[in-house]
Image (cartoon, rainbow, N blue to C red; front, side, top):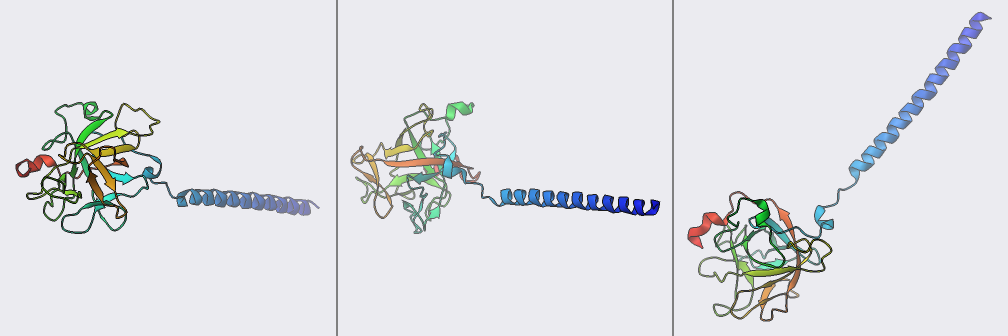
Length: 234
């Protein structure tokens, strides 16, 4: 009788242990599945949600249009600038003058651009004629025609001074780039505007009322591509 009771007790204990073990395994699998599900979720690209980035002299950015298409080079020797697919990627360094990107201040705060502002763009990748990078220029009168923009080189150095202001801003409007930008040119003799045609090329145009809506997204600047190293060539 006693032996039977002991056997019954041991069987009950074994059954209880089995139940707890199964529950623990099930819980562990559930936790693992949840973790795996979390790991399989794609982390959204910051650019998909962050509309734009505050502009700072000396910092580098990619530029996108209102459709999210990135500005790059047509894959030809001059590397004309256009939006969309099939281009060579490039990065642009925001510069305060031709020959110097950063202002002569030690404080990073001093490098922030106010809204609105003028600036130059140093095309980090350049083209076949300026492989170390160069200031963006335009095929425009009185030196040329067509209005296309490209990394300057050789005698084609009609540098473009850009003008930008925040547009549809819901953030701090004091600083340029906290919102999408209205971008145009500001220094050419005959052209004050920017436009993008059906071919997606970026072109200068006469009217200052013409501008393109863009966003700037910060990227790391290549250490070996700096306008300061090209002073003798500018």
